[in-house]
Image (cartoon, rainbow, N blue to C red; front, side, top):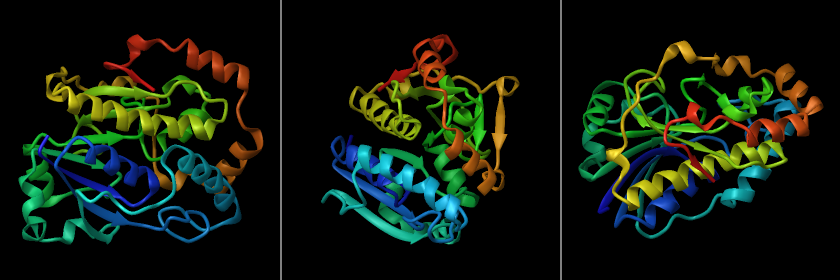
Length: 264
């Protein structure tokens, strides 16, 4: 692959994807929307509170385990850094050469609208949704799957970008192998998404995968960020998960429910 353009954010998992893609392309253009790397401690997408701080300490610990800390980018990654939410106010001309790439990927950006979404849909852009669609859609999907004891529905969906939120045709699901720590388990699903995507890029098989329309009748949960409250997070931290049920559901998940599953 010659050039790849990625619309993403600035957490270690987003930097991790850029590093993986830099291994399989000559150049990676990265449009990075920046937000706090201390969620829960500093107000941002998630509010500042003691409970959120404790919750995200566990998230960050797992994120560092799989992706390291925030770090400098490889030499062949060319970034533009903007504030989260500013993307739709950029003139297309500012993105210049990044719009001439061979492959476009969205992972963790703000909701894209206007001329840019029209362009990206036309370019058959790939979106990484952290959640197993069509079962779990919206915000913090893998948290809610854990909260509902749907451990078998923790994972990610690699699908075609669409104008609707996470509603494009699916290419494959990336699923984590069992981890006894639920935070590690969900973060492993991010790693599975990265590795699965890079594998298909290397094999030139990404666009050979059959596109599967999302069946909204299978939807279990559609959540919004406002629903992830202190009370909900505190309840999860205090109760945790039933390890025996957790392991059993993961190891006995029905793979026929998933599209071309890639397991890591």
